[in-house]
Structures are given as structure tokens and as C-alpha cells.
Image (cartoon, rainbow, N blue to C red):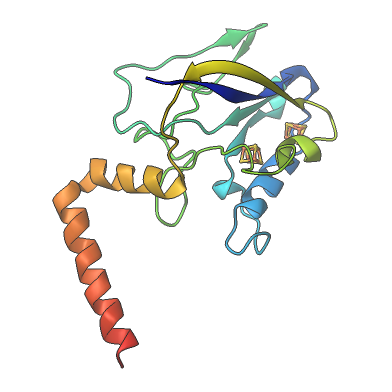
Length: 182
Ligand code: SF4
Ligand code: SF4
């Protein structure tokens, strides 16, 4: 495989500085609305806040890869005497829980570092400075990046199988043609 220079984008999370304001969820869901900024629904955010004020727990977690199957077990962390929910630190959208799924379609959500924005919007909106952004260059093997549409289609193939997906798209296309020729 070819070696290429790759820009590595890192969001550093300082959990001790997070105050649970959820501004990061608001701006992320709003930036990714269609059209952009037309609505704000934290359930559509690619960053979610694990929040338990009684235990003084405020933990921002970013949406990572989609996992078609859930893990065989669960993990549970205790940090500085604070016990976090099961799977709290996991970034995957998986069948065992509702986080990082588009609420209407159930399709997986993944942080895209705000595409071409100079600095991720959740970082810009975090006035507590719990989130900071860094970039560096690394040499890596060339890889194919999947966009939102590919990730969504892949999860539908995993769930329903390729043939059913193809049949459904063909049926929708026929319906659409019927509408446009009216
Ligand atoms: S905007 Fe910052 S302080 Fe507010 S919840 Fe998000 S990470 Fe925490
Ligand atoms: S970097 Fe952008 S896409 Fe990722 S969680 Fe923050 S606002 Fe959302």
C-alpha cells in the first residue's frame, strides 16, 4: 500500500473542566442538520454528554465507528472513586444502546471533525475549555475514507442484506420516476 502524509486531528478532552452545559451537543446537531443550522436536537449530535450531577460526572464522548454486533460483555470504569455507567467510554454506535444513532432513521452517527471547518465547532463552543483541538502530520498507509452515506448504507447492508437493499432502492427509484413523469 502507498504511504501518504496524513493530517491527524485530535480533540483533547479535559473531563475535570467540563461543566455539563451541553453547548457542544447543541452546536454539533445544529451544524449537521439539513439544511445546516435549521434545527437543533442533541439526540442527533455526534458528541454526547454522560451526565450525573449527583456523582459530579460530566463526560463528553465522541461518536466513533459503527459496530454491527454488540460486544460479548460489558465494561465499567471507576475513576477517582466515580463509577461510570456500563460502556460509558465506548464510542461505537452498536445494537445494545441508543446513543450515536440518528433518532428517526436509526442510522449510525460518526464525528466527522466538522468537515472543512478550521476548528471543530464543539471546541469553539466549549467556553469551559474542556475541549481543545490539535493537528499533526503523520505518515500512514493510504486508506479509503467513508462518508456519511457509505457508513449509513453499510449499516443497512449489515442489517438487511445487500439484496434487500438493492430491491428497496430499485422500488423507490421506480416510484420516484412515476412521480416525476406525472
Ligand atoms: S461544551 Fe464543554 S463544558 Fe459544555 S458540556 Fe460540552 S464539553 Fe462540557
Ligand atoms: S467535531 Fe464536529 S462533528 Fe465532531 S462532535 Fe464536534 S461538532 Fe460534532
